[in-house]
Length: 205
Image (cartoon, rainbow, N blue to C red; front, side):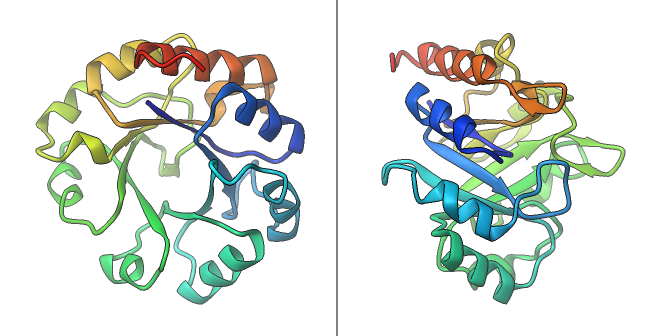
């Protein structure tokens, strides 16, 4: 089970996530309480081992800015978390994660998007991720897409991640607010989340 810890803003949080076995570290470059500048992200990214992928999260950003930020930070992956059309993804020479708010209306559009991972997330009051609220996981059963390309997000916590994995059967899980206390990354929760996700998949790290 691949694990992505998103919304990283400190080296301490990144170090704990890596030590616990995180596969992806996410930096949010869109407007958010977890937003980080490319310069700050680059400092943290420079300390990460090569086997941990660095993800940049963008919302309706220009291709030029995303490429520039990716070069500055040393990103491996770009996460498109807005209304980006397929043409945008095709112009980015990086691994692509495309976020989709899951409800019955959005289901048909998901599987045709050119990306490496479909990030299935919640849509709450028009907020794009980070709401801490899970969508109806049973909706994922209506998706005729390769489970090897599914990354599950939205309301995941150390307490429910095992059940989420068992229900949706994704290839990866993504968490941000679920490993926070008072809107700050909680190092103990990061460790617990990764441990529970990895153990569910039969992998001890």
